Structure formats: C-alpha cells, structure tokens
Length: 142
Image (cartoon, rainbow, N blue to C red; front, side, top):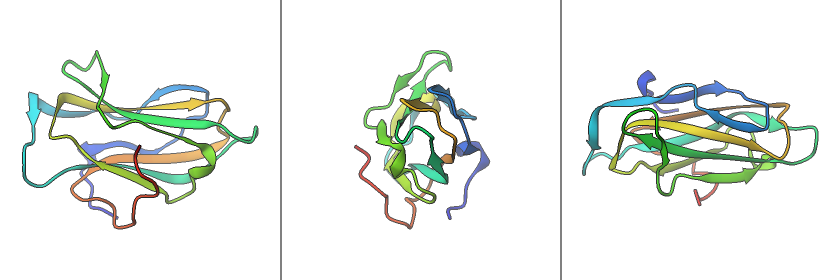
C-alpha cells in the first residue's frame, strides 16, 4: 500500500447505492490557478475496489471520471480519465491507475456513475499517489 497524503484522497471506502451520478467525498485543491506540475516525479490517479460490488438484478455499469475546475463550480472531464465497466469486474482489491496529466485546473474531483442497476454492496477508494500500485493494474484504463 502506498503512503498517502490525506489531502490527496478523493474517496476512502466510499459507498453509494442509487442509480445516479455521485461526487467523490473530497475535492483536491492545488491552491494555485494554473497548475503545471511539469516534468519530474509523476503523480498517479488510483482507483481501488475496497469491497466487492454486488447487485440483486444481475448486472449493471459503474463509471468514473476525474474532473477538473478553475473555480470549483464548473467541471470538465480530464482527457483520458474516464472508465466504464460492468459490476462483475469490481472485485475486492482490483485497481486501475493512470498518470495524472501535468497540466490541469486548480480543483480535482471524481464523479462516479452507477447505471442500470442499484448496488447492494461495494466500497471504493480513489486517491493521488507518487507511484503506481505495486499490483499491476487490473485493466487498461481505456
């Protein structure tokens, strides 16, 4: 497990069940209007299944996207950050990650969409880390 900075955690065992769009528990504020982390040590966005997803109707779709904003009000999806998969793939411990773009707006949040069927179980974590998880990513991000 990575050493995590509390200020870089979007969700910690977050659980939602309704078919809807849900924001991450936390928003990351980089404290500057034009974030440009530039070359150097890359940062990674990591999504981890904390507790396996479950639903009573058999199948559904869960998607997420990392979004950025200059004012914390108007949000746009960061290019290449969207992921959508069937519930069956979200088993405990599965992880997906990607390198965070070096240029983005001041604020970051994650939007999770539960579609098709209500979840009856499942929790997830998402955060920014200094390295990719040691466990290989479960799937390519796209």
